[in-house]
Image (cartoon, rainbow, N blue to C red):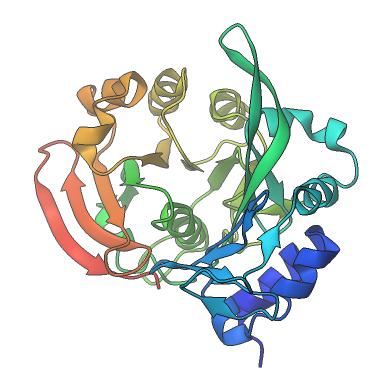
Length: 330
């Protein structure tokens, strides 16, 4: 029986890589494929796959090895160009907005990061040309991974404004997705609520033609590919949610948009890149939110015991820890 994650990689990603890459990747055993978190393509460099423990080179037979050798598959510029064409449905021009932001999103919510020559207009990125690197991050659905966490995000039956903090690849999006599912559908004594997801990068719900491909709950509406600063105010006016879920706060204007949600009496659960609360104080947008005591809970994640390790849960008002170190996503 094919593992669910391996099945998603085969179905969602393999059709969008060059024929030569497909031949190599399709030979990787399912037992190894299921643990892959990233597939890294760099022009004229070795093909590398990564799980949360380490990265491995891939040889032409699909064998993973920690050591570089002459048998390791070397990704060509042609592989990069053809893969980009397939990922943009043979119309790179139609995906210029996404490319300008440095990533594409494949069906299934898999984010594809891009590296190349950045073209600026003033201080803004106008385009990324001469793409020479592609990083495919595998999206995972882990139902139940937030079962332990959700009770800490409630008080007196009310959802608390919460910020999940972690470096990349530590389970923030996976955790947000499962929190949305539980709060929307309800679980045990947790009553189901109306939830809106502002899915700017199409990763949380992984919508295809507007329909979520992941289970984000029975009472959830999704604004797919919508900038947070626009979406946060839009859903309040049009969908009347009780809870809004979004990811990766920290861009210009995010703090004002979050405060407008609070002023409307709507709860918010979001994420931000960082190592801990202190690291967020180095960025002006998140510093504003911390100083104004917007969030009632901070959840710090890392991958010390695997992605989704809950390092610490902090009361956002007293700034005292409520819990420390336990792992739930694997």
